[in-house]
Length: 279
Image 1 (spheres, rainbow, N blue to C red):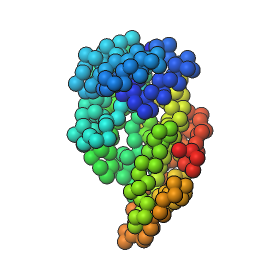
Image 2 (cartoon, rainbow, N blue to C red):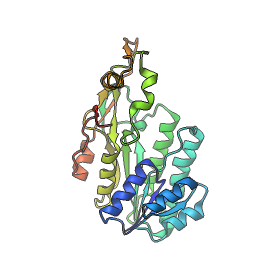
Image 3 (cartoon, helix red, strand yellow):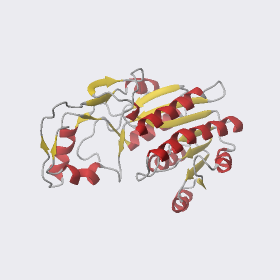
């Protein structure tokens, strides 16, 4: 297949490489907003294009021309605000749906986030659980999901993969350890839901060959509490331990169930639980 990866960043680049290595993609079109990244993407053998969602409708159409399948893995820069989230996710999704419909793309996969769930009682959540995002970012993600799923037809199959917090090569928790070291925190019992980038790629590649319309959660098999997450990492780094205290009204977060995705995709995780040595 000729496949487009729209928003070819941390996840998208690894995905593109696997699609080519496995022979799933005979041609791989990769879009980025960064001029600097174009050369790097081209060096991987991708057909690299600079496309700024949602404004560059013409550039997006050219990138998708002749493609049978498209992945939307775009993410805004960490420094950008809520307005940019809405523009990228909601308006970007709308532009992509329009382009897919006019160009005959028959398969669309979108990487969303477990941030669409707002549960704070420590309960397990699955694809049937209520979505009540606690942030503007989560609301934008949820709106983009609905827009894409509403566009699903007999001619365009849409899969939405709700991802937990992504970690992996060059993206670990080390960058935030100094914010935790020696600090008093009341969220030690709160759950963290994580997923390794390589497991994300495995699921996305599998979706190229598995027909599925709808939502799938993708997360580690077992969430980890913040205390169990940070304490070994702080010790390994030789930093002061966090001071965990009891809060008045503890927010325990949620625990993401990946059971449906594992059944649909027929996958077992390469990294079933975050642990020291996996980051």
